[in-house]
Image (tube, rainbow, N blue to C red; front, side, top):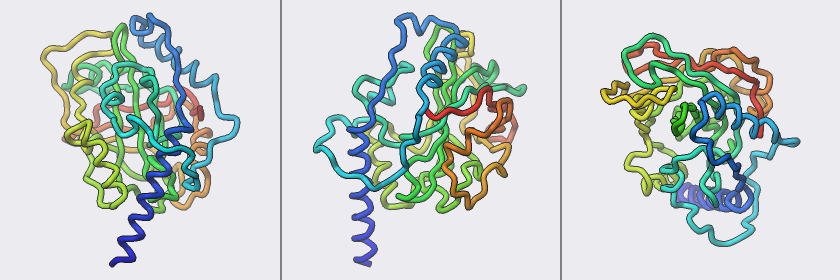
Length: 287
């Protein structure tokens, strides 16, 4: 028992060192025009995509845990409130991305299927999706996650983060093997459970992200007073066969081969009703 406990502590220490290293090595920030918020959803999508597509990686950063602690102290690294409460499509100045660090982006469209919900659930919208692993798979296995940003005319964007499990899917390298949701179980893994407590400083329940904000406004910027929204969403992969479970290829390279107009996910509510699809509108880019 002591051996297992000491091993977990050792792995946790390695994880903290990894995140601290990223805090000093990764800190990029785009600069958007002052009138950005007043633009149409389409223009915002085009502008953000221009920034993404003009800065692709020439060589993909390695997903590795073999890093050295290059500096001591990381002020505000563990204070996630500025990030979670930030009302902008720019990362807060001075913030860094220490989980889901590297991912692949593509233009997407949320296409609604007739439903009784309000706001974006009924209007749909243009956006960008970012797919990637939560942490390097060598650390605790494959943990897939997806972030979605939907643009709105003359108003702030709405965002959504979905996963299957913080415990991940072990050695299964198929990113599209499991459904995603905005509600997940608390992790069992000691390392992940410890790290998840960081989020409790900024949010009461880090394992459930409400989607009511998507119901309060539509893609044209119309505010909705009498909202109706599902409690839980499920994103079912349309093509779970795309990636073999034993794949040795980097996910970021595999995504580059997917063709636009493919449906990435069918979106269901908590009544198992299909309410939308998430469709690719461009090829993926690593940037």
